[in-house]
Image (cartoon, rainbow over all chains, first blue to last red; front, top):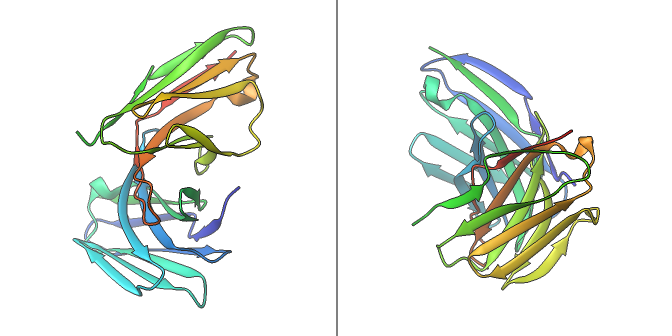
Length: 109
Length: 113
């Protein structure tokens, strides 16, 4: 079953702009992860943030986690056309991972 | 080698056929997963194997039968499927740890006629 909800469902921006996606989850977690999926292909892991962390950076990605609100956000800065994809948050404990509904990001050149 | 491979890439089968999906990884991961993904939906967990033993079965119909013959291989045997089983089937693997990044294969696109 799905664990999280993401918003927006779809986001369309111009190249160079920043994109922010949000994720809300329901139960307590060990960690929260973000994945990217290009159309009809496998998922690629982007970043993992542990439940005792509040913010994490990786290249153009910035992830925040607020466990009191059971929410996380993914910020992609200086977006590129190649960032066009679906982005999913995933939460779980041990090896039982559940995905949110996802945000479809379109970056126009 | 940080790759998870899946075969076949595409599969078309009738409702009376028996077929198998195959997944392989050589990263030494001891957890392997099957997910089902319908169009424009997130992946849904089907099965989890830990140390070659089935640890999670998400109430998947018996027409789907997983098998983990060794630590590198994961199979999904299909029999008497329904058209609504048409989907992208994704395999993934990870270390057995609380903070576990999952590595995904490219998936098998299954069409049931």
